[in-house]
Length: 295
Image (cartoon, rainbow, N blue to C red):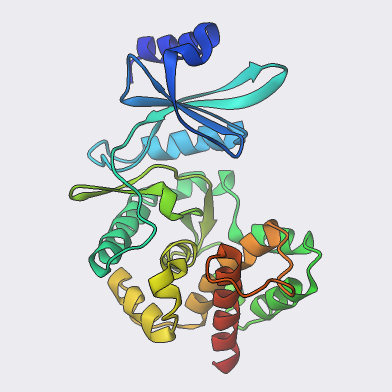
């Protein structure tokens, strides 16, 4: 991206503010705007950690420019406004629409696109080992800060499992996109576009598949009502996982456990609600724990 364009976009916001932009998204302390002169780029202001943004920019820059399906960061800086320091990023604008419910073909396409993304991210993985948080550190830290005894108990089952040590083995690390909710995946003609690859973490290779399932596919209404090991095995086959071993089961428990703990959800009093993401994550977590106990 041309430095002149970067400077013009940043200066336009600094001087003109929102007058030079069209707001695309403004929620959860994140403002995303389209520049009126350069609509192929978006300006994003958020509370994202600046160091994390720099690492992400570096990692995405290592992916071949032939990959047109990822939202690259072209510029990042700390921007001070009204006494607050935020992270300002200039990112690609990718076309497409989101879907809350996937067809069978949609699921196959998204699984294959996510697998290709995972392969691209990990061509130069060793370079970033020391810069990204590991799931082996994140999980116990987040659970320790949780006040929910049920979640702590479920986490203990996972951490005491015979396969857990191998699951978090530092020699078994890949760069993983930790958030693959449906809002971050766009369907565009014959392409699947990924518009937000934050946060990036380190974890075993099967964790990427599991996060896609538990943060997106399995919580879709048509999939959730048919939750079963046969369903999971079917999608695992699309990814290339031929056997659901204990490490895969552990990986399937990670996203539900972390989200419920981070959001401080009282899982004990959580009412049955098929429209609640937290309720669905609870059911998925208990289902997976049950499979671990039965194994």
